[in-house]
Image 1 (cartoon, rainbow, N blue to C red):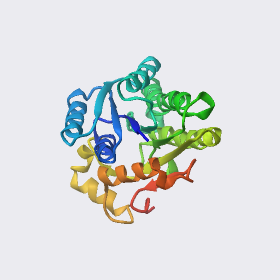
Image 2 (tube, helix red, strand yellow):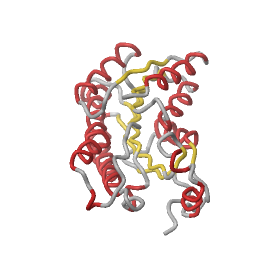
Image 3 (spheres, rainbow, N blue to C red):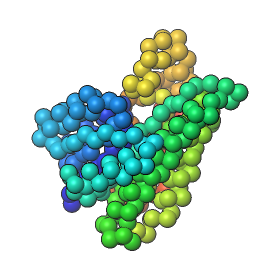
Image 4 (spheres, rainbow, N blue to C red):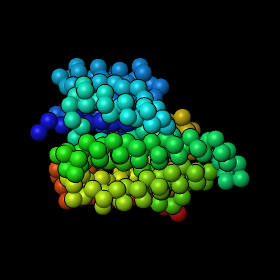
Length: 252
């Protein structure tokens, strides 16, 4: 079976590492990005240098038209989409509830929730046997923040990821009989471009690692392997599940 994988937010962090690993497993890869043009093209070059097939496609997941175009362009270039990883996301702005800004909240939920849901809509239209598709597998990248409301100052981000988990369960049940599996992966603290600035503060990193039962932060490579397992036939009887990849969660 030809496997075409679309990864949103695939230019950096977990998305980029997933793309590189997936290419070694025979997936054709479409890497979506919003602003990281140079990084996205570097991931494509890395994949092609190893004999894989990949393309980079710009698109803002807060814009429905961009999402529709992204799916159409992927199919034109690589064939039917069989797998989807919704990895794109934003942290918004850290702060207490009494510091919320409506515009920041709107953008956070437009990207992390509505954009992800619309990507799933486009995937369902193509993958579902109800629409003439042959099935497929979807992984929504959530966060351990969804389980406890996040660390202090991250309640809005945590709420957006809680919405992702609730949606994943509902969506999975809707399409389970139509050949589509949908699961959520919840990473804990992982060293990526999004977190490396804060983790350079040794005191902060030490406090974070002290709160993780395994005593360390995760790597993008570790999370990517979990994503690819959920995408694969090795998890063929699993749908609507939340997989925690967090070193044991939080010590409270």
